[in-house]
Image: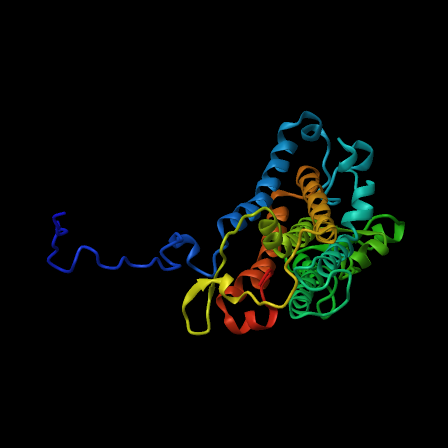
Length: 331
């Protein structure tokens, strides 16, 4: 059998070793930055402005919602003329879900944290490294929620912003209140104003409902998304900046030692609670978009929530020192 030589190349033999693909060559440049969300995370985050847009368009196009009187002072339709049950502030879902929304968010998160085996032994209160870091992330998001809605060295930031943009509390329910409207008889927080029988008027009032619903549900999604993807047999690499300055996949920092088997009934139950709360939050966000607040109030509520999410979940990907403390979900 005759030997047939292969083609000769000027700069090397034909059978030279092929170059191995690097992580950066396997992924488009859009996801090569640790500051940017993955494609799936981008799609997930886009649901929220899309929901606000859908609800706002519904309020403009649906005849009953469009023709119903709207009170800028109440930031809603008067209850006796509300175009829908969900347009009433006293509807059961608003009172028992949204008004105590952070309780439901925290409860769902704790069920996931201590029932899902990806974070540690299921049905156990053992604080593994993953659980400790997840609790730190929960604490950071809770702090963000608290300073805007509960307390910030006095009134929360939402109330402070309302006052700084010209808002005030006016008393309308009593004769003394009406007589003193021209005086400086005002109350600094929204809660104190309502307890005194007054109403907020003027100023820019960031939508606390939008802020709470977006922040809480996005927090839950960011925590469970790696588990949901793995359960579905999918994977989407998150990019991080390592301590040596190189950018690579977060999969390289996955720790061993925790139980990653998530096919059990405990695992499914642990994920079900966050999914239920996130789903209910989406519905109430749609109702808020359709019946409450102005466009700009809803937009600023969304923006403030997204800033908090970026600080807790995207900034650590680019800052190794911060990531070493608060970690990343699923890593």
